[in-house]
Length: 591
Image (cartoon, rainbow, N blue to C red; front, side):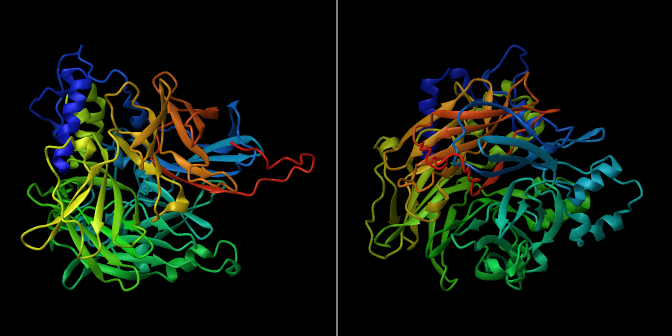
């Protein structure tokens, strides 16, 4: 049914939009993304892909103030950190894929109704080596390195077995807290500790030095007590395995700035699952967690370990090692948090995903609900090559390749469940998630469509992580709508949505901040770092929306000394606002 959902979404969009958006053409060129040679063709006139391709030429080290419009809630005090692509240039050379761009941190500090802005590059080893050599010294996800004329083939082979010299440590995806410290993440085992006030890079940690994994996902989970969980790949005597790593929280009385390091020293593998393909572990960007379970999803996109080794020796982009298994299903594994043992495995149709929205156990404990931003296949990764983005306006298939939809799967956790195969004659938008036992004994699960909007970088009220929830927030992944820069609020109970957008403005991942003493799940605000389109490349703003109504409350705009690229993921830390002794109502401002 997953395939049918996307097929019916295509049919729906075809009726709603101009038919030329959906003409079939032969793909060619980089990333299997085709484009029309007609200079007059513009399939997506409302979308400005240059927001992703900008390169920052000047850091902002000293906090700068901006222009305030509207209202900043008096109770809102804290720091919003953002991470993402910062520069596609190294000397006269350019990275070919968005994932290779040098990591750039942004900081918005909010206090007393004022907001300041800073940005600095993460001083990774590869960043420093690139700029010292003025060339791309290490092969990245989608970019070949510029060969060093002094390096022999034998030295390149030796570098394959030395992660410190042969593996990029560019951590440009996300940022997460470990105790009272903050670290930038990508999928290599290297993370970087940053000073939350100055954005200075303080230290580099290799997770492999503390626990037996060779990489990890970009999205760990931080629980209520500060414990951090992540999934990494372990190489065992029986082949690759997905390992859940626990970084235990430490008492606050161990001293300031000690929590993070102590958490690494206490790290341990608490669950492990062998990969189904011994030399081709699945690509994994995140995983799921509930009160009693870990959820690991093996999608058909896998990493060929043999090809990976060859890529490093031949200096080929690491993306060449990704393999899409056309005729394979997606496996959803449920592991016990108490014992680490595999409880159940479910089979779903082939899909590709980067982000899980949320997951939770039913009140009776007889099922698990998991919501995922799904694509029909992994071709959306090809859409993020620089050439593909630059030429997207001439590619009639670009929007379809990039079309994600939020799907809900229900996983029965008992042997007695309603064995229902979906009625395929029902309207796909009215179908409910279902499960049935196949002839071979496997349980096949079919999803339901939560809403017919392209959703990416989803966030929800962090209090509801792994718990039954109702709302999530996302940015649009549909490039062919009236305003691609749309923030979306989805009500998963009613399958309804609210949106916010402004022409020429491109918001990033919306982060929910709960109002003090909030009673309802959506009592709070949404923070989003947004950049402007062509003509305002140097401007960035912090948007503040009412999370209940999605109406703009205020914004602060900064005119920076240079282009601002769009960021990916971030983290907000709420601080206790300063007490104004002259204002007895300092904390009485309600949204």
